[in-house]
Length: 471
Image 1 (cartoon, rainbow, N blue to C red):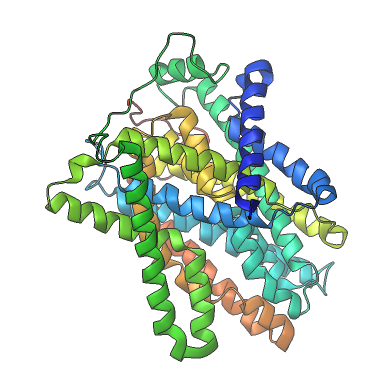
Image 2: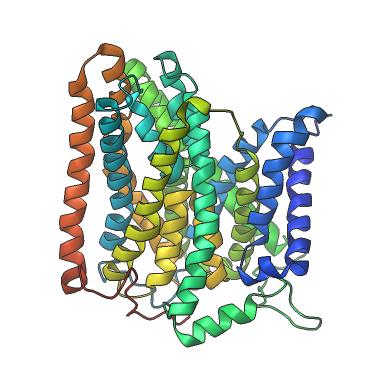
């Protein structure tokens, strides 16, 4: 009998319970709105790096858990009935796409520029691909940071995966701590309405409702003698996940004739399985709408399932990070981390607040979390100000990622150019990657100026608050 799944999920669940308990007792955690999942993740990080090895436990399973829960979270989000008043048709798809692609462009180009300067001055032997550990760790997360940096070790970059995981860990810390700081700064400086600020502060307590106080109920959509409503919703989610797996499997068969190029592309596609999960879930919901049976999907139930996925994913993500000694790269890691902080903590809030016309703070928090950690990090921060995901921020973001995936394929396919530049002694490959990411940055700047209009460079501090945040 194999208890591995139960054992590791049980450990994550125990840490969540402990994190929730600590939240009820420690005022600091309540004051800074730190979610129980992030507290639990920090405990998991310590446990799996220092205690688990002595108990014969490995954190390898946690990476698989994060991968699957991320896809489940996306499917649960996309199966919901869109809330009325969503900003579709107001250029929100274009704005969301630009806001995300801008992070890819800035993180890649400025990191490559920084490493280029280091190789021409104090670190001539530095492996140039180390620059891309910033976007891999911050923008994509630990899974992609590990898998996409693994080939570099065979090319001469010793400890490539360790650096990638380290950048992912730093990204999580920036996303968690920085996100909480941004929320508190937003409350203090009026980045959200007074009504919303009062609601957030009121909820910034122990994390549990008072005795006799009830939250928003979720309604059943089935007759229990046939099938339980929760069972129906979970079955629908896993049906979509099965279809997503089948679609990717068929693509893998179709790409086999292309040899190593097809295999490399397929590995990248499996890494962004959530994009295909989004497409499948959207298609299933569309078919159900056409058949007149979409009313059987309860948004409240989907929110509960999504919430479960987010809590477990954030907890497992932090626990999956290995704290590896990387003394040889400490200076580069510090410089790349500082660059990432500038891009995400200062530049991102600036352009988000001027690019979007509504829910700027909500959209900025979600984008900040995903640009430093993973989508669950962004959703965890968003849930602090939007507990029920009633705003269109999460749904609009998911739609935008579908477009972003196709737009960043050139970057994904070119990620090994700096490594090949080092191996082949051909600096032109490094210059080509810099030119490509520089082009992305310039095009995003142009698109930002067009979409933001007169607000693009309007004064008003880092964050320009103008839109509505009423739920």
